Amino acid sequence: MTQTITPLIAGNWKMNGLRQSLLEVEKLAAKLTAGEPPRCTVALCPPATLINAMNRIAAPAGIVLGGQDCSAEASGAHTGDLSAPMLADAGAQMVIVGHSERRADHGETDEMVRQKAIAALTSGLTPIICVGETRAQREAGEADAVVSRQLAASVPDQAAEHDVVIAYEPVWAIGTGLTPTSADIAQMHKSLRDQLISRFGGRGEGMRLLYGGSLKPGNAKEILAIANVNGGLVGGASLLADDFTAIIWAV
Ligand code: PEP
Image (cartoon, rainbow, N blue to C red; front, side, top):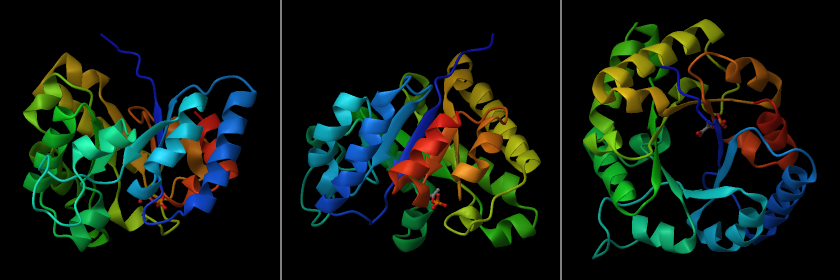
């Protein structure tokens, strides 16, 4: 059985954006509502400080908002952390977990990422669970093994009943302008799909598999057309409405 998957284009603003940046979201909303509706779900994951204000502009244009991380705990003595219920309360419907920058900067392990994904699901948020190999791991021929291990250990069993999104983001492609070949992306996404199907059956067929890492207007059409690529996680190019819209229209 082949399922129809609605692609997702999600922008990750990382630690960028002040209230002034909402002008860019107004521009994006105007572009998306001017013509035919996009053929994908469009999401933005701004810094948490902007979620509430951005939602007022984004929601009427059908743009879904997400957080960039959440705690595995719902509340408590965890100064500086944000919980999944807080993100949901602010208007988020999704949350990125296990981004390679959090794995590197905050020592997040697969088990921590899995717990965060469970917290997201418990609060009704769709987790975007990130996996991806480093340059050294790819050069050592370990990319498949590393990514398979991350997938197995970061995706919770609860994914069998809920919406979860997996983002394959080779660490060496993030913010570098480098991308894997289309053949390499196709091979990795096929391997991810096979693993999801063998673990989750029919549900694994329908889970969205995003590609992330230097996805730009110039390469979006080719990358988004690859089998088992059901959208993209976009960093730098999501900050400008013109670039982000060009990627959305490439679907
Ligand atoms: C990211 O950080 O998730 C990302 C894909 O970044 P960029 O598009 O800038 O490579």
